[in-house]
Length: 183
Image (cartoon, rainbow, N blue to C red; front, side, top):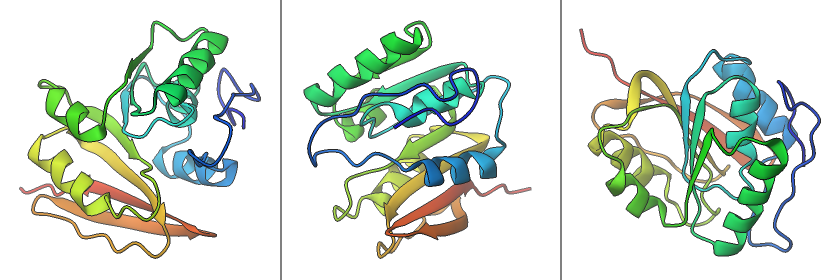
């Protein structure tokens, strides 16, 4: 697994051994960041299921200022810390070892440009995540919530949120959600 673009391009990242995490493929990362605009001038990402930290570190490599990574597994947190250290991004990455639900409740009046959620397949959490993002008002007006799920997962939105697009890559579906703007 590696960073695909930006200041850390081609740098190799470590990932957790075994089947406990499922790293986002380079193809999916490229597709997501191409859709969002491949390079950024600042911004913040809220990564709800950090895994190895690859998505947040990719965002920082492409120009985001800050990442808040949430990871429940202590072993995965150790891998994230190591990847952050390897890239010397300690000043730009904050890591919380807790569940995504706890993290969403602890956020205090902060809004993000990008919220990325790649929950374990089969748990069917996408609809709940959309609802919690909306209830806690975590997304900036022009921000994106990007959900990476199994291709079979049905996703429903809630008032104030809309699915802008989804795309399937093998067994993975990527869904782009935005705030509904009322005028």
